[in-house]
Structures are given as structure tokens and as C-alpha cells.
Length: 89
Image (cartoon, rainbow, N blue to C red; front, top):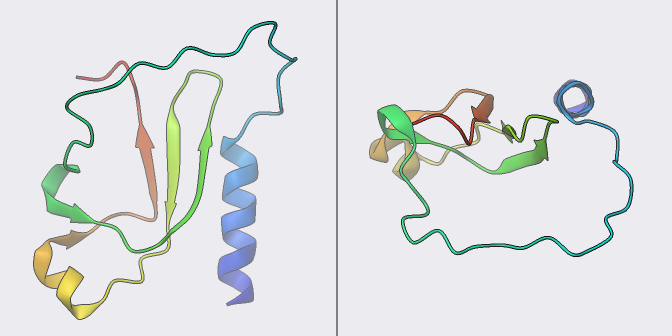
């Protein structure tokens, strides 16, 4: 348990950038009508242990991989770290 928490903390520290300077205006958000999209290869995640965004706007999920039997029947277990690139097709 301690090893998992330590690994998750180290992984989050490697992928997350330090906070940037304060913004002068609030960010603008648009609705994505086709969200959420299914994960590739019928991946199924358990609980998500952390989420962070790097300087290139890549989103990283730390997957705890704690699937139930019903979730295992739905697809394949996702990898422990999943990276989303907003510019990928």
C-alpha cells in the first residue's frame, strides 16, 4: 500500500509541471458534444488515483487498476498511466 502511494506520488511529480503565473482573465471553456469518448481497445479503469496536465496540455491519469469482476467482464484493464494528447486524432 505504501509502495503504491509512493509510486503514484513520484509519477504525479514527474508529469505535473509547477504552477504557472496568475491569469489576468478567467479561462473560457467550450462544451464538447462528443465527450466522453470511449477508451481505446475496450480499456476499463478502476479508481483514478490522480490527474495532471503538462506544459503541452497532455492529460495524465494514474489508474489504480482495482477493477471489480463486473468491470473485468466489460473489457481489458487499462495501463497504470494513461496519456491523452489533445492534438491526436
